Image (cartoon, rainbow, N blue to C red; front, side):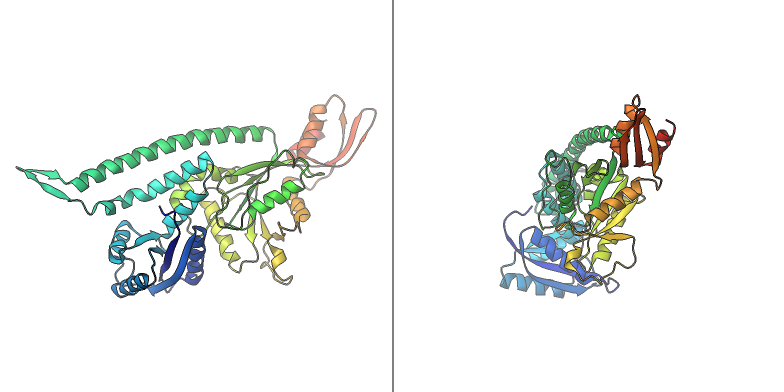
Length: 417
C-alpha cells in the first residue's frame, strides 16, 4: 500500500448510459484527497472495444506521456479492475495502478484505530489481493522443465501457490478473531436489550454529519459527563469504529444511540462483508436516523446509496427518519421533494428538539394514560422512568398518580394495575 505523498491522475471510462459519470469522477478526486494524494489531472474516454487494459492503446500512450512529463507516479481508476486489467494496465503504463476499491481500502486502513476495525480492514484487503496475486509473479519462470514425462512447476508458480495458501490461512485466522469480537459485541447488545431502552442508530453517506449529530445529542444529555464525545473531522470515512452512547434528554426517557461507519457509492463488497458485525448495530436498531448532507446537490443519490446498502446488510425494513442535516447552508425555499423528513443543523443545534419529538413519536403510541401506581409496585415506576415520558406526576395516599406516554406494551402492563 501507499503511504508517502503521491502525484496521481484520475482515469475513468465513460459509459454513455451513465449519467452520473462526472459526479463519480469528482467523488474519486475527493477519495484520493482523503488518502493524501495530489491529483494532478483527470483523463476519460468512452468505453473502448477492447477492455483488456481498461483503456485503449491511444489513451494509454496519452496518459503515459503526460505522466512522464509531469512526474506522476500513480494512476487511480474509476472502476474496479479485474486481475488481468490491473496487470495489463500496470505493464502498459509502467506506473503504480490503483482502482477505486483499492483506494477505499487504503483510506480505511489509515483510519482504522480499534482492534476490530484493523482486523476488518485487513480481512477486506487480503480478500481483494488474493485473486490479484498472479500479477506479482510474472518475472518468475512458469515452467522450469521436465523430468521424463513428469512436468515440474516453475519458481513463480510454486511461490504463488505458497503465498496464496499463506493469505488464505491469514484470512481464516482473522475471521476467527473477528468472530470472537463479534460474540463480545453480541453480549453487549443483549445486555442493552435487557434494559429495554429505545435503540436508535445513525446511518448515512460518509461525511454527512453523523458524528456531529451524536455529539449534539450528547451536549444536551443529562449524562453527558459520563459519556465521551466521538471523533469529528470534515473528511471522508472519519468514523470507522461504531460508537454507542446512552442519551437522556428529559422529559423523554433514556435511549441508546449508535454511530456507524459511513457509506459511499459502490462500497467494496469485501468491506461490507468485513464490517458486517459493526453494521449490525444498525440491523438491531428500533429506529434509523438516516443523516443526509442536505447542502450537497447530490444528496438524492446519497439517499439511494445508503438505502441500497442498508438493504444489502438486512436493515432495509427498519423504520427511518430522514434527517436533512446542514440545512443552515441552504436557502429556506429549497424543498426535500415531499419526503417524510426533518431539517436540522447538527452544528448549530437547529431542529434538534423537533427531531427528538419525531423519534419518540415512533417509539410511543398516541395514547396518553392516567394511572395510579401503588407504592408496592415500584418495579412499574422504574419501568415508566426507563421507557415512558411522564407528562404529570404527583403523590397520593395510595401511590403515584401519573399521566404518561409510552410504548403500547408498557401501557398495557400499566392498565393491569
